[in-house]
Length: 110
Image (cartoon, rainbow, N blue to C red; front, side):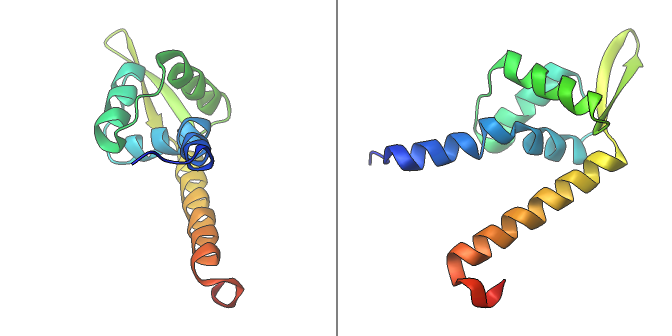
């Protein structure tokens, strides 16, 4: 069944445009990972295939904001989620839950 363009835009905005949430979630349940491993896990877990450059850009921005910590291991750079990254992910999930509750049940449940 073909989806509407509005639905396709929603999916794009809740995946590619907030890729940091998926990066954080993958790192929350994994040991530190290389950037390409993060991208691979996102594809495996969520079925989306973010562009490599987009993934690397998001990882760089998250590191710059203190949400990820780059660590050198055997000459490679791996990334781990910081405490600030965990809090940001928790805040994002609570926000999304609130939005879904409002959309599903209306203002009386928010």
